[in-house]
Image 1 (cartoon, rainbow, N blue to C red):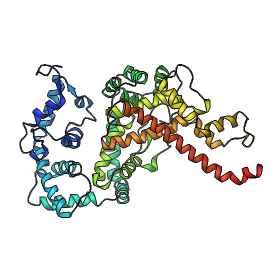
Image 2: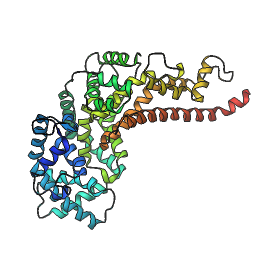
Image 3: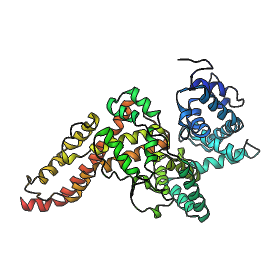
Image 4: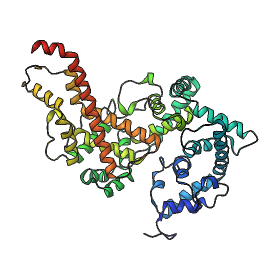
Length: 437
């Protein structure tokens, strides 16, 4: 691989070279003068470079133009990064004074220091009091308090109007990207690390998600699913009509349960439940992050996570446990996932009952049958929630094995939920069944 100035360069080397040109950031630096790993994860990538919005700048190898853009963005934020380093020192000191031990100090205080640098610039004479107050706000906000603050924030007419306008602006700013499903189809077929790296670095997931917002988007998605999996896509519960509409700000304005049209409020409530208090920022910041996330394809900022959801979408139509084995031509991974559910005892029981071979239940439980017929929808709902959690925390699958394990685990947990529902139903009907027998 070429590493000279005229050819591709490792991203880590580009970051280190640019970082060494910024003075006053020693507390954010490693022994070799480059940024700490946590500095990159908690500050540079999400807050300075914003790799969620600029995925090309997050790739491990950069061409000369992209390397120059990355360097320019980092150096342009030098003053704020110096102020962040200074605020971090005050936050560490006040954590000790307040005897706060929750969370890793860098994970907790790097983003908070950047927030203070953004709001106040370099620390002034009252920096100690400001840092202490920020820490009390952060660590004193329990989930219930956070939800109350969220409700109050969104109920304010001025905030509500501004946030709704901002949501629509960001939604409309996301223009459709060229659709290329080659990488997605290759990973479905190969399930290899090399195929995953290509897919994770591509815009395939976002492209499919943004395609759903165009007129006829549902039909076009169905065509993509058929091309890759050979199956017709059923109603997957993604949106109400043939295109995704802008989700509402408040939960009270939701018109259905469709996955991609959930309100910003519902999504941020999930974040508040998911994040421990020591990892939370202000409610205002959480809402702003979610506005960006909502506007991205499939409502997931990180391209690799959008690709994971796109994978789930093309596999989901094969999850039809009531039909038994998947038909010929379906990708092998999808066939294995369906077989994993189809051999469950309660599924076999339901199939026998539908065939009239189970005397005790000539008319099997209608709710169970509906859930089994809509298994793909339940699977995608659970997968999206899991990926949304990853997106909030900035987590990514490491390799193809991680992706396979993620999808397989979601299929299993969806099946276990149905098994539990069946068990409860049987317990409730036990007197009736005993009377028959």
